[in-house]
Image 1 (cartoon, rainbow, N blue to C red):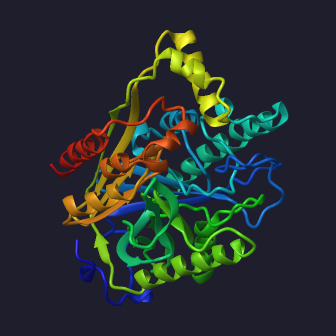
Image 2: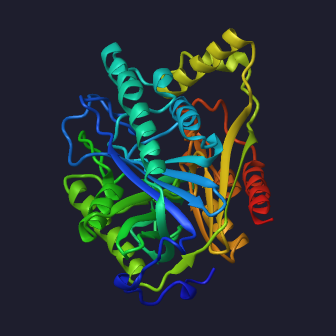
Length: 453
């Protein structure tokens, strides 16, 4: 893919399409998902109290696509830290029943903000929350989040109407590799020489009268500028607000990329909120540059394919080792060992395999969209863009089931938090084997072939 093919000049007032000639129907919706009462916040193990107010509301937003042959796809973006099947399944089941949308054609992506309610699947096992705090989160998921996501997707499907789809691309540079090599291995620190993905892919949805209905944009970087106790979408939240302010009546959606090993810099500290607004503004400016560039118009048909690949894990440690670690002074090792021992006692074994859902959608010859589960590291987007170059290639991580860090072979062999040690915080039993990248990319290749035939 050559960026020069996507850049030039677009005057939005001239972007028109007639209902008669429309190749696409697109629906757009958004809904506030800020908890109605304080909950524990996501992301940081050092949290010691629930949220205390908000900087701005958290949102879930949806784009529903329908091509001329009736194929539909819904992309949902959320200002949340995590996502898992316990939330996705009831939403997908309700939508399939109400709107006949196949469950495989619904993708839910999260921005991974660390200032959202803690809804991670591992929460009940690894977080020592009070009964009151756990009940507040469970109530939020069951009584607020799942019903709201179901309503959101239904509204997007009911909003389907003729539109043009345009794609273009820009760049931002505040996201940096956080994998810093030292004599003792890789540590979490800014590495200006590390592997990054600066691309900011942008999709515009334009109504027949030329009005800009929606702008979806992506970036591969953790939403960890902030580390305080207020609800906030972090830089992605501010970027969405800035895009919507620049285009009144438009819905701005942030699609998280493969940012598992990337952090925003500078970050944290007394100026954390200032940094956050700064990063959001930089990303929104990148979106504007892409909007003002000459985009590629996307034509049909729409093709969607999904597969869940089994990722091999290292063998479980001997029971004697787990029993020793269950009394370890290291609280993280202790709780993980106790979890694994309980699994052994309850089920007789622990499966050393992690399911990883994948979805690929091809929008004609212009756009290939790849959705990967887990906290996907940047190598997956870079490899996909090189391997499938031709159409614009947009790769999103953090989709459907954010089960653990999903390392590439490089990151796995290098070790460090994303490669090995982070698994101590996850339900995934043990680290991945070196086959992980080839298994994931093999699945993506099969799906790309299916949607390209």
